[in-house]
Each structure stands twice: as C-alpha cells, then as structure tokens.
Image 1 (cartoon, one colour):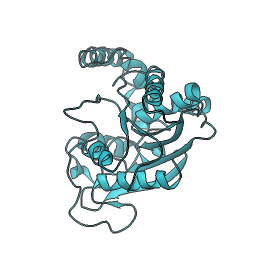
Image 2 (cartoon, helix red, strand yellow):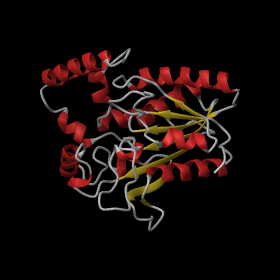
Image 3 (spheres, one colour):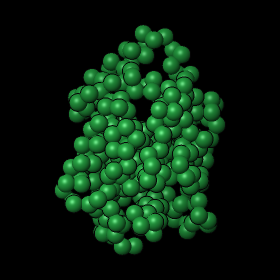
Image 4 (tube, helix red, strand yellow):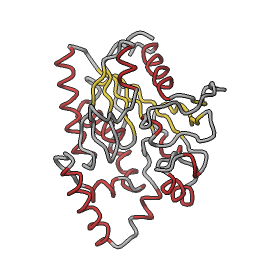
Length: 272
C-alpha cells in the first residue's frame, strides 16, 4: 500500500477513550502502521460537548504538526468524533493543517431517535446526564457535559450546527455509512438497533445512512456475511473478520482492516 503523504489522526466517538491496552480502533492502527502510515489519536473527552472537544483536537493537530514536521494531516473520525472534527476544522483550523476529513457513521444531521428520547421529563435527562458526567469523569474526562452533548445530537441543533459550520475551503470531505442487517447482527447494539429502526429505519444500530452522508458520500457499506456492520464493527472493536467469504462488490466488506487499507490507498492516490 505504501504510506500516505500526511500523518493520520484517528478521532474516536462517544463512550470510549483512546487506550493502548484496549485500543478503540482494534487491529487497524497496528496494521496501518506496518504499511508505513503515521498514526496518532485524538484523545479527546468521551462525553464532552462538540466545541470543547474541538478545541482539544486543535491542540492535538498543532502538536502533531510540530512533532512530525508535516504540512498537514488527514483526519479519520468515527461517530460524534466527526462532529468534533468538523467544528475544529471550520472554526479553528480553517483548512490550514487539515488536508482531509473522513467520517464514519457520523450523525451529521442529528438523530430523530434522540429527538424522541429528549421528550422525556427534563429532570430525568438531567439526572442521567449527572451520573454520566460523574462516571466518565472517573474514567478520565476533563470536561464532561453530557446534558449539552445529548441535546447537540438532536436534529434541530444539528441543522443550526451545519449552517454555522460550513466545509473549509481546500479540505477534502468524504463520508461512509454502514448498516446492520437485523437484530442478531450485534448483541451489544441489538436494543439500540430496534429503537432506531422503529423511529428512523435502517442503521448501524445508532446512525442512519441519511444522517451519515456529508461531503462526498461514498455509499452504504454492508458486511459480506449474515450480520451486516454495526456501529462497533466500524472501528473493529471485536478484532476479527466479519465474514470468511470474500467481498462480492465494492460495498461488501469481509474485514474492516481491508476497508481501511482501501481508504488509505484512495487518500494516497488523491495526493493526501
């Protein structure tokens, strides 16, 4: 595959942190590094607001530029990490140090499911947010803001976000969507999948293809086996192939590592 021109910053989503022992991105960083890519991690808070994480990510970008001497970096972001990255690029970086942003299962248009959940009594939402903040604070978050974060993911706030956060000139934006095929695709995502399906339709268990599309939309990807691809599968959380079968078309994936190899190869071909 060979190395891409610029270093790669991997930006995680909600609920996890970047850890060496149990890597958020599974086998992917190690395999990409063996192919010559320079890999760095976002290391932002798990349950912070988009703006708070964006400021943290910008400092990460400046540090990577200083450390590597590279002119720019490529950002690959999963889930809410794509929103953190978009805010960082548009409001702080303005395309100076970011060459491309690839988002995977990012809710660019918010979630109708979140809209429904936020119709619960506000007191209950605040209680849940309080305990989330305490928990993720213990796990390492510096500025957890669960209540604000939950509301940011609703559809109306995301309409405002998109109006106020246009794509930066000179930055290549691309996005990918994934879907689970049924309830049994992923036991962790089974309940969220059923809820999202009832309210919005097909999804990877959390994010629908309609919400995931941004910039150059690269399509809806499915697993080559019987399960499909869940929100967790996108970042290789289970560290094994999705199917023993070989892909039957460009949107059929047997192994997420191979998907990332192709992604990096295409960035390289674009001169990035």
